[in-house]
Image 1 (cartoon, each protein chain N blue to C red):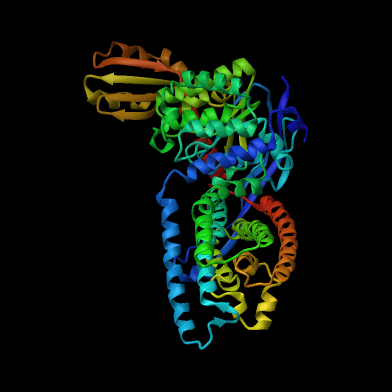
Image 2: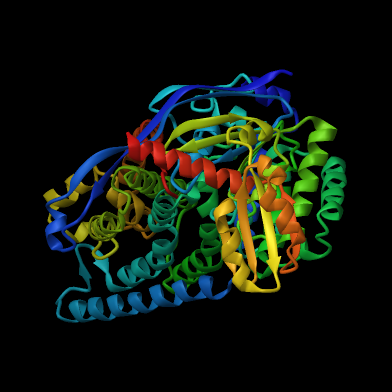
Length: 276
Length: 330
């Protein structure tokens, strides 16, 4: 760290803020890029709501697996903007094209670790969706559905959101590292997308799956991204169970951070970027 | 002069495959092999030197630049830059160097004006406000950028963009600046102003520059040339030393009123260019004393002539030809 001391003005927070700010400005350059993903994901949610309304209409009970139709509609509505924010595509796309086309070089000439830079590059776009789509939709859904959320649940939900964000992006980073070995990884990335939708509770809430499968899935990082936070907020999961699963998630994050650092330091040794 | 770069016996290979099937068969029948991009390259660079790193496309220049900047690591050999190992101490090194990647990998944010990139650089390197303003004002004036730095990058001309790329690389006053083909496609005035700024920075701060280029004017400002061919260093020395590699020759250009007379002079040297009424010959200097040359001066069909030393482009071409000949013999 000799050189950092020689550069007294290089403050880490200032550095991170500079990267965040410039990427935030770039994310806001085109409004269409912000508005259309929200519209498209909301349309897909309408289809899901329609299908589940039909399923409930055939049921003699007002709830399925202890979940009412109102709670299920609220679940999918809150999940919709979350799918844009908790997407592994942003990081995988950046890493994959950067390694395949050589653009990664411009990041590796800056005095910030590549992992930090990659996260700081995608965060501003996600922050925009969080503020302008996720927050208003969630507040509106909770108010219209007359959901009463205790303060400790809101607190746990906030921790779960941060944890879920880290989980999906750390997994995205690990997938992105595969570009160093296989160059084009869009096929793999598309598959991972489906795995997360299916096993993460974006298509069907985990509690609707057979008990043994659901129990096993709750030990993996997949439901922690979508299902866990939204189900906790809406009371689909009992509070104590949610706390336990969140602690497990934090353990998963620690493992993923160590893996991301190790895999990247190995990948950078074999990266060639020849001809680009 | 203090030595700031030491490259010792570095080699780099990468795995690639050949596909001559040209069909779905190639999915299952690929011949993978290791291609050597750099082979046992060594050199040192002193503080304040301007080095032109030359070579044909695919000679290993860009790979060498990526190794020097710590972006990739060599398979063998060692690199020390400003007492740091780029592979292991990349982040520390990045505070001390500036890099321009030409038009291929622009550092400017495409959808924002360059001023946003400059502010980003300011934040990353912790440049104090006053110094930032002073440096930026000076560079904008020196490079005649006027209002270009306020317009969206994608709307700038290539010349304006490259000037801004240059500013982005040097705003934090690095000790070493590495420029990978910074002037490809850039017009002469822009190239000249970038070269002027580079020379001024060298004279004011003793900054070291490494430039990979195919543009002959860029080479003219260098103190030393390192020439790579198929990943091997084939020349390391001054421009004068490079000229001396070839047998002394001069270039004679003749303009005729009667084009039919051109063929009379073809045998006196090696024809380089023949056009309607113009002949360019490579001749030995002693030929200027021969009878045919004296007679030529009296020939009324020769309306004008010019004698000059061959330029760097000519010399480089000759060296490449010689390398290819030697390779064929082997």
